[in-house]
Image (cartoon, rainbow, N blue to C red; front, side, top):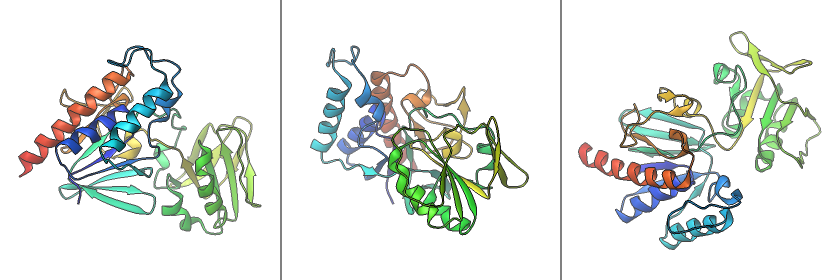
Length: 283
């Protein structure tokens, strides 16, 4: 079991990892990317202390060089669920499962807002993990909303199980190799049904499905961890970055504005030191 698990590879996650490494803690760091996509795409950053007028690409290299130079390893997996289990936490990342005494959430802000009805039908027809739940829909009709090309292998995995797959790619240059996949170039308006999901609704039509998969790189706080207090769409935290769940801390854009790298790095540092205190108190 790890002392802590860090989720997210933006400035907050990197800062938390660096500080925990310095203090010799046993942690796992999970993210779908080696450095947050938002950092690398920035055109010019003028307010990061010590690095005036730096490009996003340069800052990304600086971050990567820093943590790799310290021997810190990033596990490139997307976490799709965090569960409190008798005094510790279980993290699900595809088929893999990890356990930690504490968690630091540095998940950023999801660029894709939940579709109406999405949160209502999670566990009742909507899933975020193809390899976890795909077998439940063998020979059935499913919909897949996908935000990034890197998840196409999961779509093809689902197509190998399902009778029919309706794919809604929210990106350009899609290449989905499956004869039973139908591409729908529209954003769904809502998910509806009774006890379970039954329909995906668009502006001009509805399709009947047995289930739907939403494949994206980040999740809203309420989707990631049940019971986590949220305020105005962000994780509610105290000054020490603690949340309403003991042992769970949050840092960076996911805690609210301003969405700035300097703020995120500072909160990652605070969250790491709060974890140190939390672990010491538990002893």
